[in-house]
Length: 87
Image 1 (cartoon, rainbow, N blue to C red):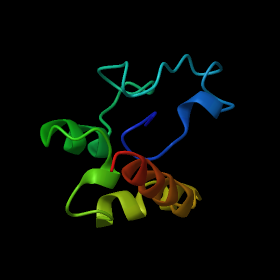
Image 2: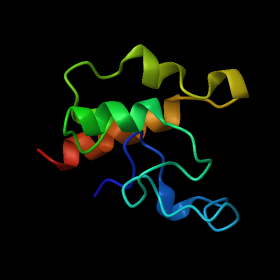
Image 3: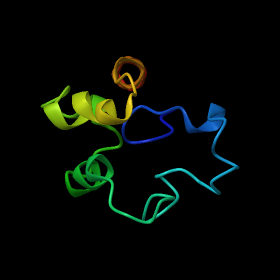
């Protein structure tokens, strides 16, 4: 069962309660109040998560958060896992 559009495992996120995040599946806008382009892209394409997109892994997802020091590989790996679970 997928928990986010981008591969973040929201149910095990340490920051979820601190920032009052309900997860992108339950929120119109991300907890920071701006737009998440990955979330918007999935929802425009009516996809559950990036792992089921024919363009996966795209540049947008592969570079998401890199400029802030985050490694995209765990999210990409999780999207692959969710994609396999749906087959």
